[in-house]
Image 1: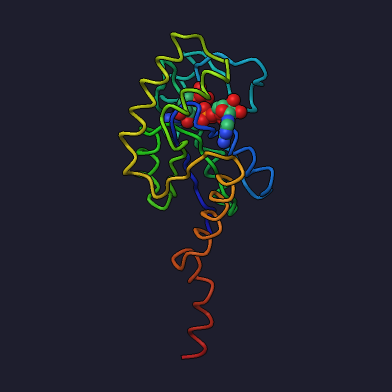
Image 2: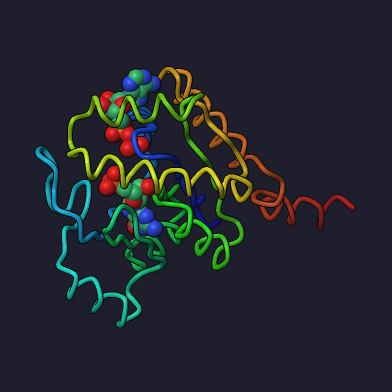
Length: 202
Ligand code: ADP
Ligand code: 5GP
């Protein structure tokens, strides 16, 4: 059976990285898709771990060569999901997680309708802004760009199957795990397992 494709979006500062890292620390069967981006690394980020940091030319080349599943821009930078690793991991039945913005999420949903889209947000927009500022990784100009583009994210909320509120990390992690467990148990994902039984017990 193909693995579960999870797509997580939300405003900048929502806690997407924090919550996903915590979920992945608990569940070892998940593969985090490392995106390519033209944004500069933040202190503490390592090439190939949080992102593959590429030049605009390299990003364009990847796109032209069909190596990206989807792309999107956020606060003046380009981001894209490398296609091959996602398809390989899904093919081997793993749960694959994409942390991507809403335009990219729409492209994934179009190409892969079984993808499960989750919107992660604190209960207020102001809290996301406060966290973004407290994180201290962006100057004022970039904070303002990020807040403007985060509003765009809220506008697309209807395309998501779930909303996970990240007021406390622990509760948000529980909600993510509950979604993963429930989605893995859905009939349409599992009924193939029982065809043989139905054939022999009619
Ligand atoms: P995103 O990936 O969505 O931009 P981050 O995971 O980088 O967000 O989180 C933004 C900031 O908020 C970080 O400094 C992180 O430690 C903090 N944070 C994340 N979740 C919570 C939470 N539930 N309560 C308080 N602070 C949080
Ligand atoms: P950040 O710069 O804070 O790491 O990410 C900014 C935004 O880009 C976030 O909304 C994040 O989800 C999104 N993003 C990260 N990788 C990708 C990607 O591969 N594709 C798209 N469309 N968005 C991405």
